[in-house]
Length: 365
Image: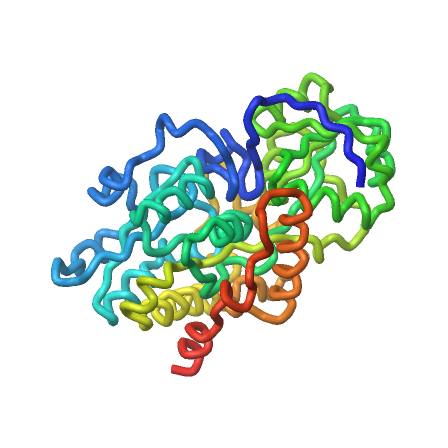
């Protein structure tokens, strides 16, 4: 597929999981300023850890530390099922049963910084988008995907005010913000193919931090990004989320729970405990969906924006940590796409990367 690119930023920046500046949390493959990123030491001290007072009271110095990386800052990281598990203390409770307690380490630089921390031996576990995991694995970092925080992260297109776009084909002859080398590019290419958009007639703007201003000035007619972020931007009057009736819920990405092989070998029950926490989060969400959306909402991302982004599945089945065959099929497709676009040098062994045994044991106990 031929592409016409106009480079807005000198570096590759992404909006795979989150719009920079909207939530203060980078996407799953963002390269953003690290100036305000809390160090491992700062986070371990508790300054950026979101734990209830009750959980703090039961913290035991005899428990070993499990360092969990999360894209975001100041205790904020939007990862659906995992967010609820953090807020409700499920990780603390389940890990304590196997002799561990979590320390949440937040990274504004998201995926790339988390991969650096893994490489430096500073993390045991991370909650992150799938692209950084493939990148890390292809670069020799020994990790495994052991569960999901969201099996179907939705993406979409925001049409700027005044842009003459009423259906996907109308994007032809116009410009759209799509960060290069990210999961957003993967979404855009699949979206364009699904809707028979001639990409030779579309100008792609490689940006995210300037996306809002590009829409406001009319330099960009549209913006591709995570759907919950676009819903939030629509609420702020920046544009309209393109809804044409076309079914694009099958073009998605995943948020995963990854862990180093070393920590899983040292204590296999860690993988089981993490899955138990995610299972509890899933069960709590389906028991009270309104409470779930309220729990993951923030000042910058309203409850309504979350509900609209995930209205395609009112059962909330995407919150189950189970890695199904459908997800494996998606990983195989993504794997090929990453190689073809030069984002990884060699295809990752999916069978070696994904380990469902921890979920299977958790659900059976």
